[in-house]
Amino acid sequence: MELKERLETDLKQAMRDRNDVARDTLRMLLAEMKNREIAAGQDLSDDEGLAVLQKAVKTRQESVEQFDRAGRADLVAREKAEIAVVQAYLPQSMTEDEVRAAVRAVLAETGVSSKKDLGVAMKALMARHKGRIDGRLAQKLLGESLT
Image (cartoon, rainbow, N blue to C red; front, side, top):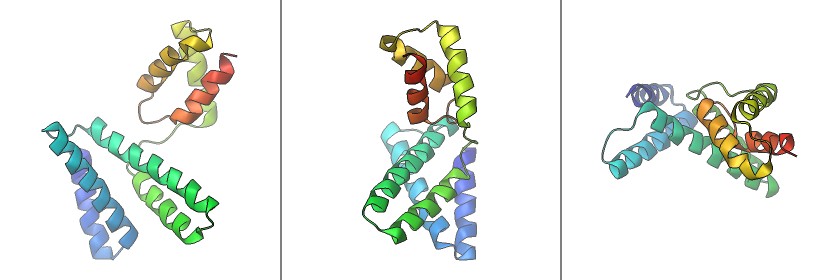
């Protein structure tokens, strides 16, 4: 698995560089991947590995929001540093304008015109732009387009 090997190589380099944030973040990612492999009983594909990374970013973004509300600037800074480490391994995210264009294309293609079929459009949108699109933003824009 190319992604896992890259994470392991970068972990070794982070240890040599004494980069604590990168070292700890990469260890956590590799541990989560190992747990998923054990649960699945097989090695993870790169897509499954990317899903682990995306979940890690989402979890940290939620933590940033909570720490920010609690006034814990030190923890916010640490979480943001970890997000930066993880995002280096993810494909480039789409901008809001790109997401809007993708939403219009999917709506035209699927013929969805009411909010009750939002799930159909969301599924098609997320499948087409796997790993590059923020689900919350996509859902918001789809909802706006269908009202």
